[in-house]
Structures are given as C-alpha cells and as structure tokens.
Image 1 (tube, rainbow, N blue to C red):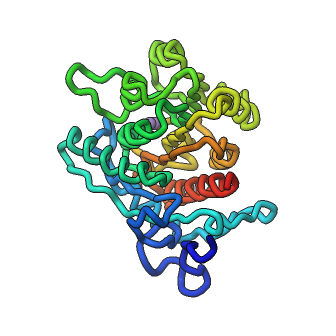
Image 2: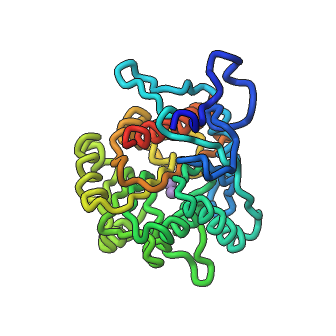
Length: 317
Ligand code: MN
Ligand code: MN
C-alpha cells in the first residue's frame, strides 16, 4: 500500500511550529476511504462540574504536537507509525454550547460515520462527557466493550434525576446502556475526596478499580498484567479512555479537577505503551484545559500520549 501512504509533513523541511494546524503535521482530511485512524477534536466542556476550559483541549494538544517527530522517541524503540498507519487529522466536530443533549446526539452520529467506515477514532477532548458519544458509535459496530480507564475519578456517579449528563456520569450511563462490560473493565488512578461508597459501587458493578495507592503498590508491570488479564483476555473490543487528571498535577496541572498524589508522566507513558494493541477499537484523551497549564507541560504530555497510542496501533499491524 506504499502508493497509498499518508505521511506527515517531512519534519526537517520547514519549522515544526509552522504550517497547518493539525496533529503532528498529519494531513487534514475527511476522506475516510484513505484512512486507518482519524484524529478527531471535540471542543466541548459543557459537562464539567468545576473549572471549564477543556474546550481548548484539542487546540492545545495539536499545538504541543508540533514538537513530535514522525518516529518514536527512545533510541531503542524507534518505530515509524505513519509507514504502517494512515493517520488523518479529521479536524474538530461541531458542538452546541448550552445544548448538551443535541450535542451528544450530533457527536454520536458524526462518530458513527467514522466507525462505520472502519476507521479507528483517536479523540482529543473535551471534557469526559466526550467519551459517551464515541462509545455509543463504537457499540453499534463492535457491541459491548471492555473499558481501560485512566482517571482520578471513577466517573460512575449517578446524575440528578432528569439531568443525567455531566463529566462524572459517563461510565455509569455507558454501563446502563450496555456499551461497556464492567466485569471486563479496569479503572486506574482513582483518588481524592471521593466517598468510599462510590468506589464500592463501581466495584460491585464489576469494575477492577485500582486506586492511585493500589496502583503504586501494584506497579506498572502488575497493572499491565491486570489489563491484559481482565480487559483483553477474551479478545473482545477494548476502548481506552484517558483522563489527564489521572496524572499528578505536578506533571499535568492543566486540567479542570486536579487531584494530588497521582501517576507520574513516566508511569502513564509506560501504561499506554503496554496497551493490548490488537483489541483496541478507540481511544480518547480528555480534560486537558490549557488555561491552567504551565509551560505547556500538560498539553505536551497529552500530545505524546496520543503519539504513544499511535505507536501501539502501528505495532499491531
Ligand atoms: Mn474523568
Ligand atoms: Mn477525572
């Protein structure tokens, strides 16, 4: 398929900080017939409960992604993902501020177009409400999925009656709608001022939940064993959702609801590298809010995590 390759702009030809506003200088395109992966922005933060600003997440991550070169960044692990994967930057989807139900419906139908074309969505949020329309679209094609969920929060709260949508209810709704199978799902990095009963509820629902302290004790290797055993053992579809607040605010301050004592940037990079490539049908990275960032460290981490995920997908080809 070499004649049909889609490559990022050559990185030494012009300045990496110049040119088109796309992820890692990938071609801007909505031609799904010539893509394996679509980078899709969802500039939405109308589901947040605390500090807004994740609507600028896609823009911040794309800006920071200018730093990326089109190969891996550890000398012994150089890969050329774009030789194996045709990656397009699909641009941002429309959202309608103030109208969350209409936005959710619109995003679901837009993601269905991408998924029906057999293209893997790699989604730049947006708050964590972003995951729900992606899961609804993917479930139409793949059925019930395993969830690998990195977050300080289980996002398993019940919404108030009649108002189900906020960024902390996504995986409760996804469970109720049968989009994900909690018994085949893992949540990593949970911490902060949460009630023990909420954590217990998620566990009773079936989630394999590792608090940040439990993760620290289990380590990266043990946690990857858990993911492999629980989420990818049956070879069923796996969705990966990465809330940047799983990472400690020392490494990722640019987010709406930071929680202290989280993962390091090294740990989250290693976890993403170890994901079960063959089974993954979609990925999102959410809750990057550039207005609270310092020196772009959060956006740069997010851009690198997307890139690491592309390496994982490429390795499975
Ligand atoms: Mn979240
Ligand atoms: Mn969170």
